[in-house]
Image (cartoon, rainbow, N blue to C red):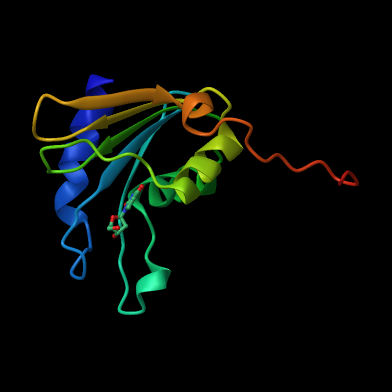
Length: 130
Ligand code: THU
């Protein structure tokens, strides 16, 4: 996890967050060992904002990753930030058990698995609906 933490902190300055001023960076570890990072990218049309976690996942999947083992979220705050619901669903797409560690500038951390963060998650099964 130390390498993920270091890489998330290394990219936090790239966060594009002029509207909220809330900087977020994420680093994810793929099952093949590769690490990918992302930051939140806001937009004048607020709803187009992309979260840091999804930016990192988009980079990983674009490089061929299909399995995620761990996600580190870093915010330069005094409290660790929990991933939003949309990011939980997107993390779940690529892992049922990924470890999520959220860190900040205090000693406080949040450490959970995606199974804990998103119980009974939606999975698509073609041809099945109730
Ligand atoms: N944000 C993330 O990057 N990840 C999350 O899981 C929650 C929120 C960003 C989006 C926006 O740029 C800012 O934090 C404030 O909501």
